[in-house]
Amino acid sequence: MWRSGLRQRVKEMLMILPSCPFLPPSPSSSQHFAFTKKPLLGLANASLCSPGTMSTATNLDGIFKQKQVLRSKVRKSLKSMDPSLRSQEDDAIQSLVLEAPWFKSSQRLCAYITCSALREVDTSKLLSQILQNPTKDGSVENAKKLYVPRVEDKNSHMRMLNISSMDDLIANSMDILEPAPVDQHGNAREDVMQANDPVDLFLLPGLAFDKSGRRLGRGGG
Ligand SMILES: Nc1nc2c(c(=O)[nH]1)N(C=O)[C@@H](CNc1ccc(C(=O)N[C@@H](CCC(=O)O)C(=O)O)cc1)CN2
Ligand SMILES: Nc1ncnc2c1ncn2[C@@H]1O[C@H](COP(=O)(O)OP(=O)(O)OP(=O)(O)O)[C@@H](O)[C@H]1O
Image 1 (cartoon, rainbow, N blue to C red):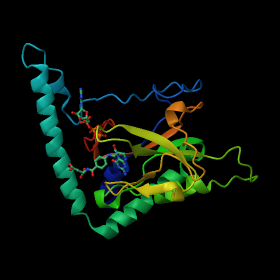
Image 2 (cartoon, rainbow, N blue to C red):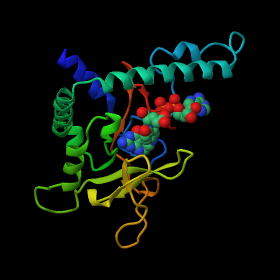
Image 3 (cartoon, rainbow, N blue to C red):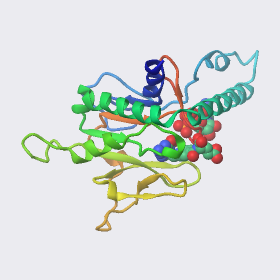
Image 4 (cartoon, helix red, strand yellow):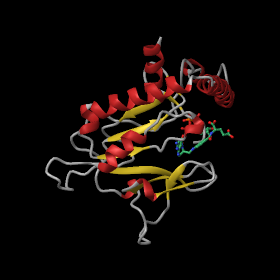
């Protein structure tokens, strides 16, 4: 019971990614992860109906509604979850990630800052590990680089900006911590889209995932 719940919550935080098409390419990686709008959770058939049987607008409308229903269900079950079980699962998920070779070897990461009001899987231990970033020889050459989201406007325009400390974060209007656009010296933070090197790993929040890992987000875009 505990294990199956945990498995689902592990899925709530999707960990991926050797390479992404809109980021600088990784020559060593053969895998790709596209941020495409894919059908989710058994909704694939609806989106594959031919134009003769159902219009595209109707398809999208149906999918949109099904996603909303599913989001409400998941939100409700997350809200009713026992807080101490949640906390145990948060610890277990983070330990699992911290011990994973793909986490240890990652050098450039994008990650979200947990919003506890949204009942997201906690990332605080992961972030402190990434930012603390101890290296065996004490050199900074192998330091992990972290980019976190910043919502720029009401049209869901979002950027991933580099931070080097949790002190770089301030609460936004949704009460989610995010980086100020400039650092303490007044310099613009590096945007991952301008980075020279590819991102190795994304830690993404998700409301639900299907068995093949396809993600249902909050619908913010
Ligand atoms: N921690 C965290 N940071 C993030 C995201 C996220 O999902 N989680 N985002 C991911 O893209 C972006 C922000 N997008 C967001 C979209 C919706 C809500 C939110 O509060 N949604 C409520 C419903 C609000 C409403 O419908 O009025 C909810 O889902 O309960 C928050 C952030 C960037 N930063
Ligand atoms: N095929 C599509 N064509 C155009 N717009 C789409 C398509 N699919 C989704 N959208 C729009 O993209 C936005 C995000 O919807 P979507 O259902 O993909 O959210 P999500 O990926 O589950 O959540 P989030 O974007 O918050 O991570 C919505 O405004 C939605 O209307």
